[in-house]
Length: 309
Image 1 (spheres, rainbow, N blue to C red):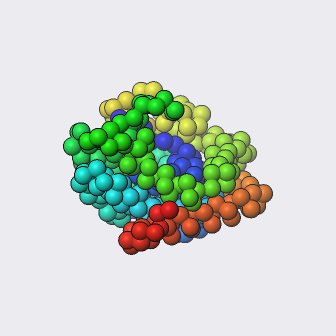
Image 2 (image 1 turned 90 degrees about the horizontal axis):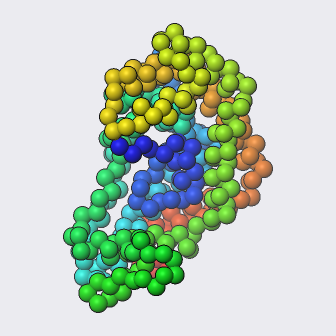
Image 3 (image 1 turned 90 degrees about the vertical axis):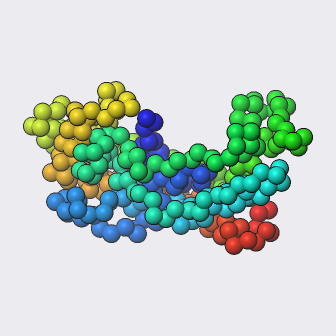
């Protein structure tokens, strides 16, 4: 089983505009959009709290609605490309009702998921990106993934040359080339990942880690920080052991008992607020690019052929 990318990287991907059919990940909503976190004792019954989407830098990522529009537009452009090769392809419309996994920017946080999946991702929240096409048509969809840049290797389908990146890669690139702001996105990505790293040195975070560690010792586990058990090799395999589940449940309970999640979130938010102010110009440029790309995607979805430049 492939472990999900850390939430700090997932947010970085959302900021970079990596809408390539892999889902929006975490950090899709604007900062401040989520409700105030429930009290610790109420979290088991409450909806998953998304700390990631409430961080200051998250306001510069795509919303879930924007991301869905972009992904569907990419799929429609791919459909048109495949049609030019005589290949029928029907993209699925965005699924707004898919299962949502609890936010894991600061590790496991939901007792129900911890009891079921330990440190593994909730499989219901993982998308199946398998393409429903005949095997011989897949190279037209994906292109020549093994070709080295500038190698001259090419794929032909029924005598017609296939784009190096395939119909899908070409469609993603069509929107990205016109609307992405890579330099500004890189600034946002550095803030998203850097603030997480810096937060680990925050005195309040270090103190709550000590309290969490003491709580875990009382439960029979010895870890210095909540980042240790999730990265433990015996919890990385395909199977989810009873020990992993027990550890994860204790992990969540100790986070709730110490208020770790809220303290960590508050510390990282303060770091991000400073960085956001220092990089306001680049971030506003990123917001403008996101709005333009989302608008172009909506025009494609609406059938405006002129939207894809």
